[in-house]
Image (cartoon, rainbow, N blue to C red; front, side, top):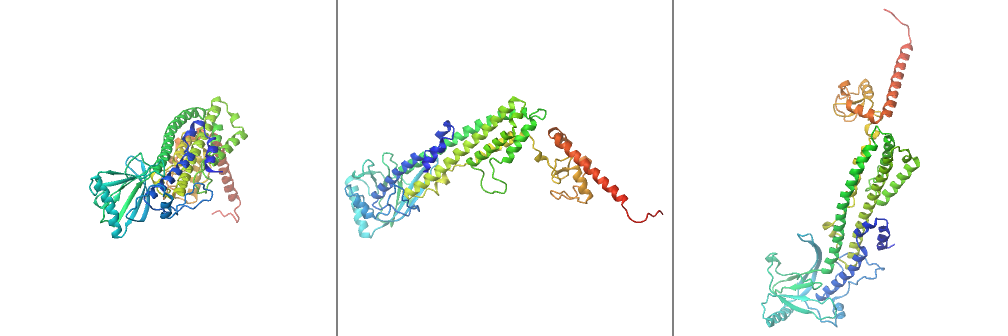
Length: 497
């Protein structure tokens, strides 16, 4: 399926009010034809063939608008024999470069620069003489710029010649033999020629107006997308704040729905909706992958019947709002990915048909970031919503990997079960098991118990604390029984002194 058709198909998955913020790929693709025509006319005016070394694009047999850029200069001149013959420059092209410049206002200007080597002296003098005669008839100085303008309405239209006063250069004396572009919006492009017979090289700079229109439209689409992202982010954060207030109400440890919400958010975290599987170093999930994982998570919630266990009607409404936020996040990521792909493909199509090289220059001027915004929105979900409900995995003892019973905080700030610290001390493990802080376990005492954390765990994890306390009591009883068995099993005679 062609990419233009793919965009139209995927756009139907987005909300209708979001669709205008898609990059109009088909419209930009049509504008490339105008760039090709502009390049053809430009090189005809210079009386040189469009070069093949501006880009490294490969030919595509299915490309119906492919332009044969390998035409010889003489055949180009012959093909336009019905029109006024283009002006003969006083040399041959040695180097042609394509650059996309950016001004102080943030506008881009695609420019082609052609370096022309002077012909032998007798040909230079003859060419210069013709130009001087033209200026003399007009009563103008020799260094007056001559502007060649082509009429875009017809290829067969004759070339018109007009004159301008010598421009004051702001680029320095070393740029005197540059042929600067005349900024005339009425013509597709224009060339200003400054003749200097003593120069060995002449540099021609052509500003491509059709190409500039193409990039102006592309940048306008990108900027409009960024403005939409800013408005959406503001509305998104407002919705999260409102939902966070409601969620804090229904997930209070004194409410009956607290345990249900804890299980829902545990499953959501385990589903890794927007992250790769552990150990996978590839980028974060795409919109398709995230949507598939979230749908799997929602089906799991439904199969467990967790929503039916809610006692408070507000919990069901909050759960639907949470689902909606994740769906919008999927749509936003899909919109960003489609615009990024459209930009990449249209630049590639531009370079392929025009043989210009924009794919390495344009991304340095304008970029589409498809990760920062979605990461920020996802971070908001985890911190302001999912993080409201504590999870037991955040309060495990690093030694026994169970909930920290009577949590004891060492001087290095690491927290362990009091029972685990006692065991470590008996085994003469005096350093911290995590950071190896010297004698941190040895110097620990009952005063190191974190009372505030202990109260927190009893409030939010009462069931787990009771189970852990029973396990520890059973462990202590087993150790005492083993000690008594060792005392009674001593072999050898009992000697009383």
